[in-house]
Amino acid sequence: MRNLPRVRSGLTRHWLDEQLVVYDPRDDRVHLLDATTASVLELLEESVSDASRLPSDVARRLGTSATPELVDLAIDELRRADLLDPVQHSPIPLTEISRREILRKVAAAGMAALLIPAIVTLTPDSAYAQSNCTASTGRGIGCPCQQNTQCASGLCGGNTPTGQNVCV
Image (cartoon, rainbow, N blue to C red; front, side, top):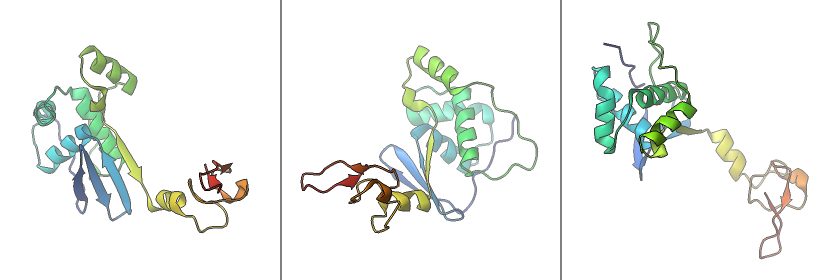
């Protein structure tokens, strides 16, 4: 039996439609987890001890089938997002399979590609850069502009119905 990682303490979670939003106050980051990765996170939080049952538990929660490769990929995504406690011993290597191979297997099995584990991480810096319209340079998308140098993208245009240019 393989040891499963533990979820880091101090994380705040909230379900939003079919995705789980996880806030990490330590790094001031927001992570958006798809249903597969969220199911794995919840099962790890519930201290599931039998790694061999994890794929069937995930499948039951999702109402579809889940393979050990999908679970391993979800654990790897959680580890990369730094949502799991560091492992004191050397972790058991994940199944050597690429996302492309998993997509082929998922398609062959007739499962939805939405099962592929994924995490989107936002930091305050990237969110601020996109929403900051008061800076003289480096304005985000949709901010009013008069010249390309004012925009973070370097592109001022997108003439709006009011005749005002915005960063695109």
